[in-house]
Length: 108
Image (cartoon, rainbow, N blue to C red; front, side, top):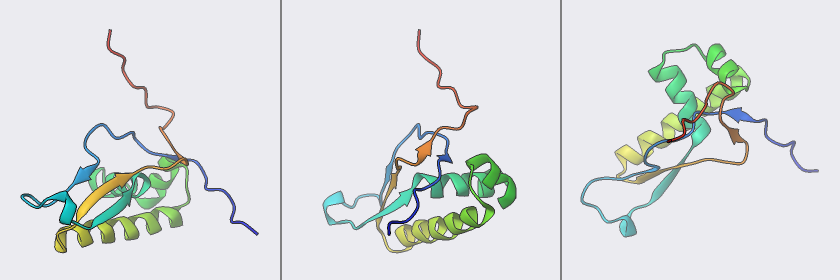
């Protein structure tokens, strides 16, 4: 029996870099820690925008418990990368979609 499919998660699309690494260390010698885009979005909403987990969950279209798990795993991965001199790669997933209010501006 396979697990149920993941629920669609609303995450702001990444507009910048997806790789972060210690300075002056070649990528070829670094271990890579993968941070999910949903983990990053949960941290952005709760830590940067200072939303309560319940409000962050509504914005992401997930349960409060899921936000709590995303925060725990995301913070752990970021600290692992910083404290152990590892590269950090932000990865998405097929279950990630932009929020309904997000509209990408087109160049004219």
